[in-house]
Length: 151
Image (cartoon, rainbow, N blue to C red):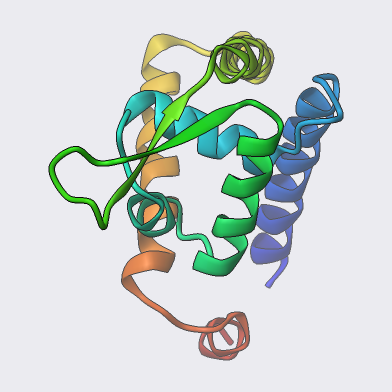
């Protein structure tokens, strides 16, 4: 039980550290919009359904965020030339600039938390983080069930 609590506390500290670093960016652009812009940069011409699936976002919330990003000049929506039913997303110049600032902040945070780590330790950390990310998706169970099973 103590190890589980310590692990959760450490994850919360990392999360808070990340939020603090992202908080140094332009406050007019919430991190959810930054996530969407980063995804669109990696997948130009994607649709909202692609983003919702990949980032595990609620479709209605994503639609509001995409609309807001479009109003802010971060994204543009274009009807697909191949399929008139499909609306594709592309970054605007402001979205590209937003991504540059976001990536700089993320790299700075990553360097800070990995300071003093060996290459081997960094690889192990990435491996473990990938395992953490996959497990909740593969095993859909509640926190309560997990806590009960571990005792």
